[in-house]
Length: 183
Image 1 (cartoon, rainbow, N blue to C red):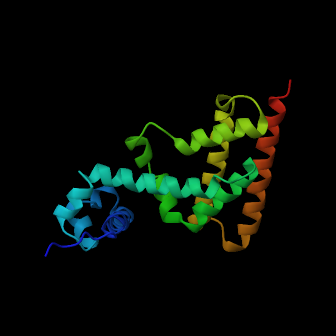
Image 2 (cartoon, rainbow, N blue to C red):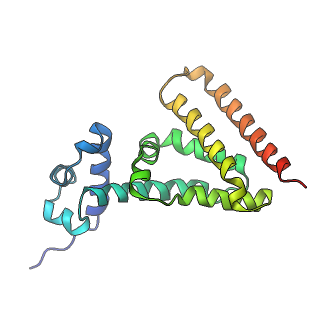
Image 3 (cartoon, rainbow, N blue to C red):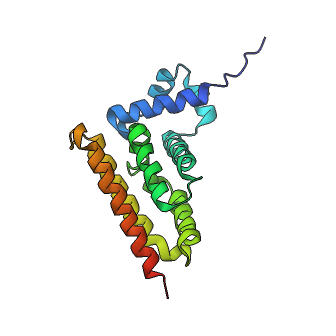
């Protein structure tokens, strides 16, 4: 009787690869190690992923999709800023994969950045390209805030103030961008 395919094996493979990535970086990932940690064999792994690069690409895509799900229904840039920060703080491992540099080595496209430029144009006017600087500035601000929190640079008692300052800075940047587009 033929064996039934395991429907959970791909998810286990990605979880295993992410664990190895966090333990020792890209160098820690090998097809054999991933298969072992995912409780499968290397032929099953190779049936789903051609090589390590394809596994890394799948990890980045999965985390991009999770991030997109967190921001897609927002009604304003300040709300995007809040949700993006919440994603980074509540899922630091996933956020680390998104910001590890893997994305820039695996893909030219930045779908979340492109989405935010488009939404910025809808909310503030102008063309999406007009908002590239704003979106990048907001991303930098969020990333800095997230990393200061995740790394423990600020003690927990400063967490409320850190988030308050972040929210204020987002509002100021958005307001300045809106004003600069007025005729």
